[in-house]
Each structure stands twice: as C-alpha cells, then as structure tokens.
Image (cartoon, rainbow, N blue to C red):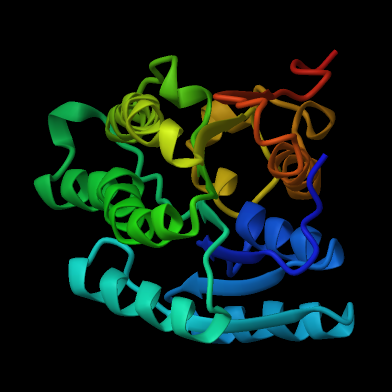
Length: 244
C-alpha cells in the first residue's frame, strides 16, 4: 500500500462537489494539493479549508478546455511542487436538453469541458510523469459513460468518449510506470447533480445518492494501491437506489 504523504496532486474542478471532497480527503492524508478551476473565490475557500486541516495547498485559475491555459497551469504547478505525482481529472459540465433543440454551442461546451480537457491535461502531464518514471491519472466518469440517458445525450457522449480515451491512454503509458484509471461514481449528492432534469433526479432518494466524500475516499484508496496492481476501473455505487 502506498502513502499519499507528500504526494504532489493536481485536481481539476476542485472548487466544489467531488473535486472539493477529493482535495480535502487527499490533504488529510498528507498530500500537497494544486487546486484548479475557474471560480477563484470557491477555490480560495477550499484552500482555507485545507489550511484548517493543517494541509498544504494552493490554487490556480485554469480553463481546462483551453490548450494554452492548461499548458501554463501544468508548468506552474510543476514549478511550485517540483513534481506531479497524481492527476485527478474531475472538471465537467452537464447541460441537459433534447437533441432536436440542443444548440451546437452547448454540444461543444460539453465535449470541451468533459473530454477535450482530459486529453489536454493528460498530454501536458505525461512527459513529467514519464521523467519521474511514475504517476497516477484518475479520470472521473459516471454511469453515463456506460448507459444512455434521455436529454443528456451530449453528456453521455462525452463520458462514453472519456471511457475509451482512458483505456487507450492506459495501454500507451503502462510500461512507463504511469497508472491510468477511470472512477465511475453513481448518483452523487452535489451541486452538479442538481442540474440533472428534475424528472430524473426525483427517482432517486437522498439515501440512494453517494456523498462526495464517499467518492473521494474510494478515489484516495485507489491511489494508495500497490503500483503493481493496476485498477483500470473503479465503480462506486450507492447501496440503495429507489425510494420505497
């Protein structure tokens, strides 16, 4: 079992929800955290929470869908932490609506935020990890990466694409000591899930949702596994699904 103590961890979408929970959980275990998102006020709040735990963190603005913003951010993180041991690709959006009236702008935004961003972050971090001869990348997907959902076609397309991208990348870099995994959480109680259409959200009771910290604990445990034991997919499901 590996320790997260003093590991340099870059987390996208770290300002709220699962990303915030991962940041706090990893910080509690001694990791040094680079918090990445666009909401600077929210990032500053998460950073203060980590300080309150006695942890180490800093935050940076990054548009993860923009090539040059990603390149500059990864360079800045590497310069400050002198390593990037773990990359958590968590940033994403879910814009719902039927295909027939879905705008091209929303389609492009969804794929850029949920899929292109992961490609850009991985491409920027891999040379660093290859030089280190070690590293972990965890891409946060969802059940929508396996199943279609009405009125979430763009989101599902992006998450299906993420699953294929992650598997392909993992095979490319596994001999370089870089472990690439997909985490697939079930319905989770976050602000993000609140943007799911009401008729879908109402099918799931509060007891049927994971908390962000339950997901974060599972992701942390994944990153603590022996590096010879590659966990390619981590599926995290709530115990109860439907209201009684």
